[in-house]
Length: 133
Image (cartoon, rainbow, N blue to C red; front, side, top):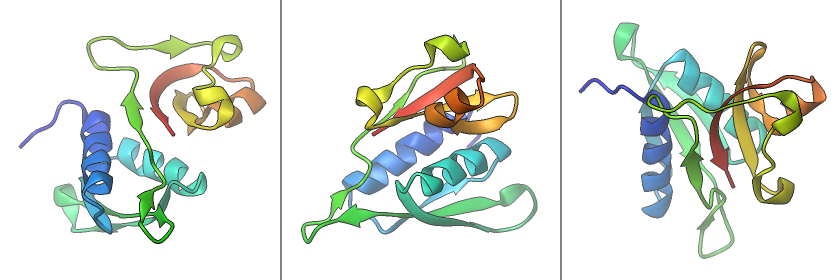
């Protein structure tokens, strides 16, 4: 099935997998989903991810992280901000702070996809893709 909004699809799949306490989840691989997965891994929200399949049918297998003996998911919430019907852009002065810096905003800048903290450090604005906390 063709998905118009690959980012929202990815976030929903991760959200559903963490709710069901799955160890891994499979997301269709695009440049965008790979970059977001890289940011989530670097920020410690997910374990790791790898590509499987070949050609057009490539998928990302994302391993999820939990904490404690009753396995609380590290990702409390994922929220899509900029949607295909309503894009949300932010210049470097107005970059959002998620939960006072506890969460991250994933921003698509001219230098690639990065967290709000990284974008602030590099003095960049861009499209606010999603919030994760």
